[in-house]
Length: 325
Image (cartoon, rainbow, N blue to C red):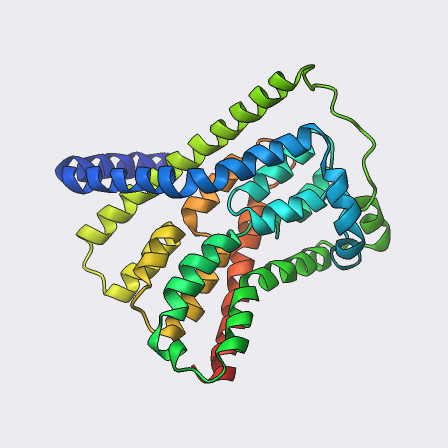
């Protein structure tokens, strides 16, 4: 009862704040809508759509042929899971977790492997990370411009969040006490086929477009919601600039990239980059909404996002100490 009371109280408080801060709410909503429409939709739509097409036509077998001999010895994944790796490391939030969920739903991978993949296969898009974090925040930082070992540091910082994600896969296997037989079971290619496919190409495409827009509207809703929360916090809380930058990044990493534009290089590396591994609360809620298969653990996903953040923070701190930043 107490929990419900506090939830109701928070909801009423947010409504009151939104009513008395109409302009802030309106401008934040418009900002979130623009961010979704002009930055997220053009990036995510083609990725989600083509992955849906690949899954419907079982075209991921070509990816498996190329990637499985490389990935399996290191990560112990099945052939079908190679598509999840590509989606999770190259397409950005929440495409990775959506692909894992859809692959489990269509019996392409097992639930146990789905939980394993969820711990490390849903990361920030490299295109966003390179453009908005590495280029806009690091390359333009005065200390980085005058740094003697720019090339080496640049390569390390580019790889840092993705190395942390790979480390999470080893932690998951160790903490869940996978034995060799369990790993072998994960690596078996499922022979079960999805028999719910439609008969014509046009129906294939209609199904893919519907699924793509459903996912995009969910993403858009959370982006707008967290944009409003961010706007209210920034306008009505007397916080120092660095704290506001951190809070903004925790809520929504796209806004955080802008908030860190004039921050010291040390803080960009040790705070912003780990938060990129985490993805922000907006990306977390987007990802959790993509999970609709019973058996894929949301708690497991949340737990490993925090582990990923912690590993990246430790590695980033070591990098700063080694390079004297």
